[in-house]
Length: 130
Image 1 (cartoon, rainbow, N blue to C red):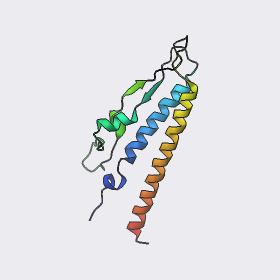
Image 2: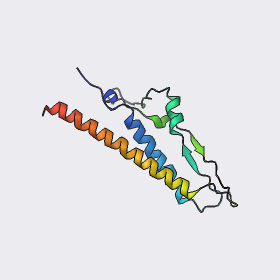
Image 3: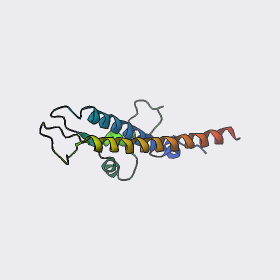
């Protein structure tokens, strides 16, 4: 009986992609904390999953032999962060909020990566039969 990667790995490859995109956005926010008029942006992870209806969204494949996968990031909308204390120069970045979100996102990314690593080790063990 064949096991497909999409069933064995679940939504975690798509989660990793979304966390990676979010890390880039949060890093850009932090880097532009002193840029006049810069508007902080973010991805709402939960709304992406809600759009998918709790089911995984498949990545677009360009060839019949490509492996299927999941990508929660394909439906991600970039949102503007609402500032708690608006700046006089129009910048909406709150460095402390952005750094906390970045750290939380990094922990989630690492957790998903650790989970995938254990899944691959289990698959490797099943294939080798050790």
